[in-house]
Length: 142
Image (cartoon, rainbow, N blue to C red):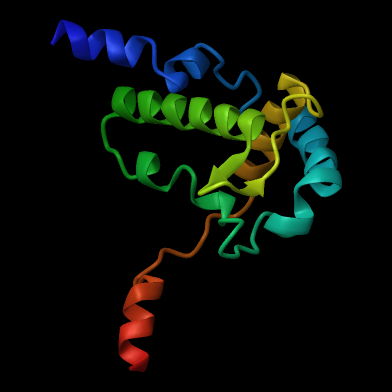
């Protein structure tokens, strides 16, 4: 158990856990986030963060699991984890099998701008719940 705690304490996600989004719901942050998003993120994620592709997911789905939780303390902790994951992902970018799907933004955007983008995304209308995955749809076509 002690080993697991140390692993979690020193994981890359834990390094960002203290970086909680200070601007959730703040209109000024949402406006800044909209500007930063349009200039840097919209070409892949869509102008309103609503145009997912294989490379760029629908960012409105980030909170979907957390918002289903009934326990408010657990929901808050879940959102904090998602916030930390978002910050880590934006700063480091996304690379899979050596292919860069999203460049790192750590040297381009400030933490304030990244949190503002997160606020903008949170302000978008929720995504329609998925009832089928792409695998289900593919199987039905064959």
